[in-house]
Length: 292
Image (tube, rainbow, N blue to C red; front, side, top):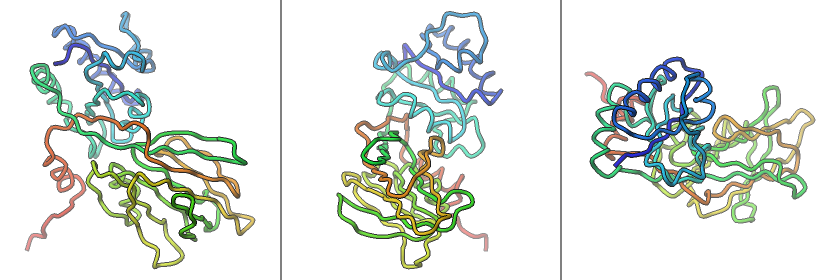
């Protein structure tokens, strides 16, 4: 049943603003109470008294609508964390790999969900902490990945990796990607890493252009703690840590980047497991056959 919903949207897209107004009109007809993310409410510039979404209210909300491209879902996941309210991601971008539904089907689907239980799929997130001289300089969560890579004009860099505080490897190259299964189809895939089914409880670590060609992706259970340390070798080495492509910080020599499974997962509205494979085939062209 849907009695209350919240709307998040990519305010840089005019079609998101227009579609949000359509949703508000429909919800008014259906007598569904609506909460709006603050920046979206300001962008709408409407004379109304819609309440602003905040996490203290999230347990009373039945569903959150995320309007935007694949990247915006990452923002929405951060903004509601640690809420367990399910997110229905509506594709307002180009690829739409992580979306469950397109705009033209939203109202019929919401009407259907109003008469039955909301189907969810739980996705694990990762927690990132950067320590400098035992002082926390960055603490964040991500649905996709943390990328530790050379800065724009840097030479290749040296990274030491520890698992459960034990040194296991040194990586010499352009950097490392530590990804969740959800993020395995993002930068990890472009760097040659494997596709992982999104509900698996693991991380995949993929070197970016490794100097040692024997270094390839490794999949680890996500109950292990991963630590990456910048070991500077050249005066021009400069690296950054980037969480979900948005929040980033400069990493100095000796800084410790600690990655763990986040304390709370995120819940996505997910109707059918086969929909994932349909997206793989149609949007990523995975498993297609040549016309012969």
